[in-house]
Length: 232
Length: 116
Ligand code: SF4
Ligand code: SF4
Ligand code: FES
Image 1 (cartoon, each protein chain N blue to C red):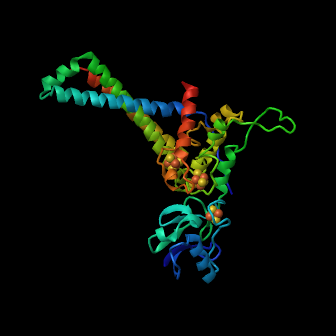
Image 2 (tube, chains in turn red, brown):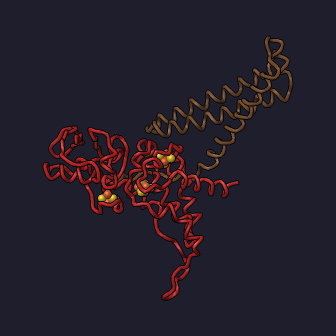
Image 3 (tube, helix red, strand yellow):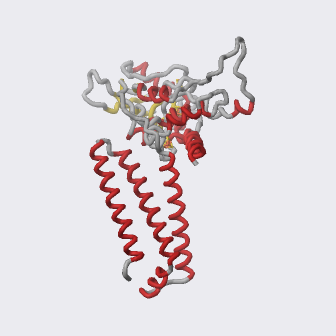
């Protein structure tokens, strides 16, 4: 199979270039990451980040034939050749397919992705949640922070320093929706901002690429309807 | 390194709502006008004059135009926020758009209520 892979080593290369590889591999039953690791066995200078190899850790998000996805859960058989691999766009490249996620994680951190609850926890007592309330977190908690969505979002490309991005906003809503959280209004205050939230123009690239099948646009819509409820 | 940027102004939902409401007004006006003109085609200047002589039509037209200008302002501001990152240039562009839209609004009133 033929591959064309983005190469860039800031220490030695003046600018990025695409390198072609050919690999003898059976597409059926193999994932893209398997192929990348075999290529890396041939050319150990190729850098890629991965860990779980089963779509759980979110390490190997990359742009595959123009579309963001996780290499480890993308079947080789579904890809047109030459398979073109680039790093996620909109984040600085550290080397080859590895990007610097700091900005992305900074936005995640900014939405306070943890329960805020001022009640004194009783000793040996959990904060209980009904099955119905727990169900409200489905489609939100599964996010693995792979950044495929945020780096596919044009609004993030234009304002990466200010727009929280789909992943951050999905997680913001995950805590807004949690019956155990007590900071609803502070969270809404923090999000009601022309840049932090309202750069989203419902382009829905995020929904299109999410490898976990999540829907950040819908979560963003729910944040907006809460803001509407609060204001009218 | 993540740069420290000032962000966190507390507005946006009203603009977002106004953008949607003005869109609805424009849609209703367009449907109304198209429907009316299909129902009762106007073929000459006298016909147009008669149509716009009616106060409800003038008012509705004015509301439509004001919605259009407000919608245009919010849309243009969004575009500038997306693409124009130099603060002073953005401010200048905002000012230009506001001036133009206010002028259009005055002009619209003059057209609708001015001497025929
Ligand atoms: S929402 Fe989906 S695409 Fe975005 S970071 Fe989470 S898992 Fe990845
Ligand atoms: S729906 Fe919003 S967050 Fe998702 S890609 Fe579009 S602009 Fe970005
Ligand atoms: S290696 Fe963990 S998600 Fe792909």
